Length: 267
Image (tube, rainbow, N blue to C red; front, side, top):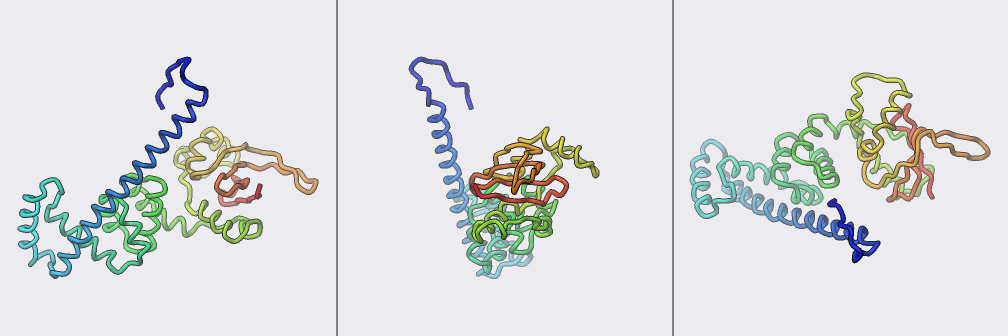
């Protein structure tokens, strides 16, 4: 954010106005980007379908596709219609032509480079849906998506234990949302941890870089404190880390000796 110039004519709530304007512009850009991606992918999908319907395969169909590329590039020189790209469009169509509607809607708004990664690196529909959803939610670049695939983020998310009290303390629909918030495993590499460390050392590193940790947890979290004192039924408790989640409207307590142990209290 640029520095706000000092002037007697600028009202006290100007900062709020500026933040709202910035949010509107960024939201509009995201919507436009998705619309552009969707339109481009629709063209690629239809071109891939044409090649598929003509039963062209790499090998005996290479001459046809090569000539098609030459002629299309003459008409549309800025579209990147190389033979390789045309074959990729066919593979894109083949990959998702029989997939469910939800998955097709997810990949339709991804950048083309992201889609090529998923087609080349990920085989199962459930994994594609996971990575596509994470990309859209977290704004992953192509490199971040590639790193997530290499680290098997999908597999790690499936293995994560549900050590929480969501079903006991939250309504059913709210518990589902809470589990979704904590669905992903969290990368603690930003703490420079390369081997097992004591709880106190881990806690100190987390507190030292709490802003980064909050970002790892996801959108909607606000940090309240560490070793936070709570009293319940006349007993005193100290919570390793206490957060508030705006979407859940709940307090979130996390015990660092088991990074999956989470409890909720509705406000």
